[in-house]
Structures are given as C-alpha cells and as structure tokens.
Length: 252
Image (cartoon, rainbow, N blue to C red; front, side, top):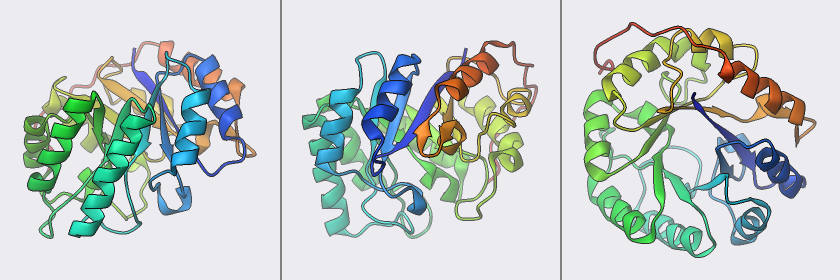
C-alpha cells in the first residue's frame, strides 16, 4: 500500500493539535512548512521544537528548507542559510529535509546539492527533492542526477512549476515518471491531491510502497486536521488500485 504524507503549516495556531491528530491516525510522515500561501518555506526553530515534541516516533517529521519564495536558484548567502537550516533541523530532531536547488539553466545545482547530501548522510536525515523538480529542463536527466546524489524521495505533481495546475492534469506524466524511476526512490505525488480525485489518480499510478500521497488542505476543516478525512483517505488506500501500463521516460 502507498504511504501517506500530510503537509502541515507551522504557522497554524493548531499545529500541536494537528500533529497529534495525524500521529494518532498512524500517518507515515508529516512535511512541516511555513507560509503555505508561498507554497511552503522554511520553519522557525520554535515551530520545529513544538512539532518535534508533539510528533511520535512512528510518524516521520520532515522539514522544508526553502529560505524564500520564487525560483530555486540560490545565491551563496542563501545556500549558506539552507546549510544552517539543515544543521538546525538535525539538532532539533527532524527525521528528514525537503529541499531543492537549481542552476540558471534549470538543472539540479550539483555542486551545492552534493555537499548538502553529504551532510544528510552524516546526520542521518532522509532527503526529499521538492517540486523544484517540476521546474527542471530535463526530468529524466534530473532523476539520474538526484539518484546519484543519494536523494531518497522526489515530490512532483507532473505539471510545470508555477503554472498552478492540479495533479489531475499531470497524472499521466507522473505515471511515466513512476515507471522510469522503477522503485529506485519514493515518488511523492502532491499538489492538488484531494479525497475526491484520489480514486481517479489511483487508477493511473501504481499504488505501492514506493509511492507516497502528499496532501495538505484536503484533510483540513477550518484549519484543523479532520480525523474523519484522514480515515476516509486511509480507506481509499486500502482499495486495490488498477495497474499502470504506461512506460517510457519523462518528457524532456
């Protein structure tokens, strides 16, 4: 069965309550971000301490490392800020980081990411490459580069970054990406997943342990995580998904 990840806003006044609800439901992981209106930025040390105290050992806590909104081409000072945030995340008990960095020609920033992934290995942090992947010029080439670096998880919704398209518009590209990855890393499918469209998405993607469904607002009711919605989500995942027969590489 596929994994479930819930993205939580560290700015919410219900953060502790939301984490308790997610953990009580046995959800696999939490991605913690601030400023969700900016599609998720880095979290404060205080928010991470609060989240770590509320999160049990069965639910992985992953934190966003994104110092600003906009593109993913970072200056040297911004890269240093990300490195400092990584060390903070490890010190405060995060299980993993969520990060992405690109060059001006829309390729993964290999020199920066190489050092970052070395730190992850030394500190025992799992690395998720976020939707900067959807801004890459050559997805297939980017996958190979990220695998070589040691990235374990890849977040995508199959549509170009900043075009504000739902995952339902990119699911066929995601299916091609999933086939290309072939279990070499976990595909985190997110960006518009809802309880209403999940059954449709399951018909196209292989619903297995190397797939993780990533949701945010779909499980909220008035800014609180809704236990009934989590239960409905888990029920969807226990159903048998139809096999995906698409093959090939992601489009360049």
